Image (tube, rainbow, N blue to C red):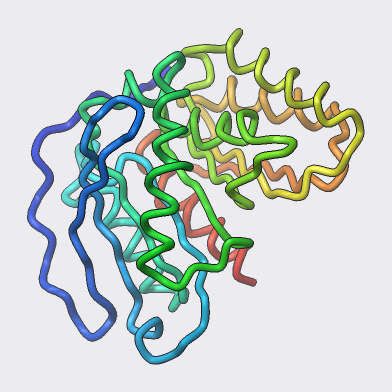
Length: 252
């Protein structure tokens, strides 16, 4: 089953256009001291209003995965195509992906995400805290889903979790244990979030992703919008298709 390797230096971002602007920044983790580069896409509509907007936090922001552009750029292009009024935060340092997105390192990384990065971003930009989104692909797709298990029931930071081609097989026992812990802690209480589990049709991570969907579907979570989506594409190719589909669903 596929997994994405660390990638090298990301290509230089193109200049800002009338469609919006990209700001480069960095945030240091208070847990492990690592300084993570970030790129922030701010749509043109943001500057012409005073409205709070959704913010999408994207793992693997500087990863190219064999494509001409970074994941950040590819997801940004989806938002531009759809005219979506949302800020996109691409989180870099993909070279640490196996350490940061899998456990036990994922615990420290999730703390960085929720205690350092989100407060920092939302102190700088007008954010709608009810519309925070998280997305990841492959190994980072694991954490895009298991972040929910870490946060529920009483510390929900995100409302939308977009997990694409998650490599759940890497840590199946740990993932299942966390999901069970969340289910038990909820004790029938509502879980008011959306979890999208996207995968390709065959030859990718569809088996473990479908297994996670089945496991959670059979729980009968109250209030959870659990969505399974499938695409006729490759492991990497599914990313943009699934993200585009998720944006249409969420912003319909």
